[in-house]
Image (tube, rainbow, N blue to C red):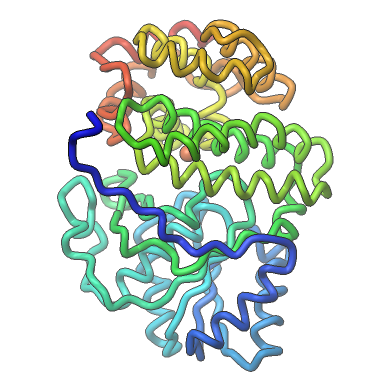
Length: 384
Ligand SMILES: [Fe+2]
């Protein structure tokens, strides 16, 4: 394996720490930004974070037009509207503020302000990445949740309304110019959302870690990302004002998305299916299926060894069963689901979930090959 060819890139500049948001204004000015588009959502407007950003830019004399129509599962319509506002307002940079949804939408807006639509032309599954070229405007990504790590990722996941399909728009050129990780912005997240988004970060690191690909850089990052999640997420859930735990979780989230350059597996395929078919929260869906998916994967000897190697992080034996027991206890302590009981998924739709998951791009990367019927039988074990 080490003799084969690979391309690895970790180029995102990250500004980390309390106060990083204040410094962003000066960075934008130095980069020549004069008029920006702030891409965010209505939920955050209610919390007041976008207003904080607007007043910082106003004080600095830099114009900022707000587009806050991004939905929780962003659609192509959101992207078209945002692109229109960008063009009408004569913008020359974008600030994305929020969870993965506004950041993903902002990446696609960045693309469409200099590229012809429709958005599905750039669908990664159809080789659309080759049409995405510079110039595109600078994008400054400011996460307010710690989970998706979209601020260091190269893709935007957008639902195309006409086909109801989650579509990945991918290009290394879509990666934000700068990611601003300011833990002050995540303290307003309530415990349940903190836990659900944090579990997503854990699953990114864990699925990336067990993917069978030669990528020692990503493996190292995933390892440390898992360690941070295990230790810091319970602290952030217990005390939302714990800036150190909040900061560590922002880092773990960015590490997860950096590590999953290696890929993700069927935990995400199933979570994507539950999101599209039942609107299940991504983090909750990931939590609910995690133990069973890892048991399925542990039947592969390589995965078994990798899971066993996490024993030291969970303060248990280096044995995959012991690690999964600890992982279950960790999820339950966070009040996360460990089966489908709480998610109201009807048993008669398991085949539909499997059909969607098998077509999901993450499925083919799963470390243990997945055949028809595997996902149904895996889900049958965790449905009441
Ligand atoms: Fe995820």
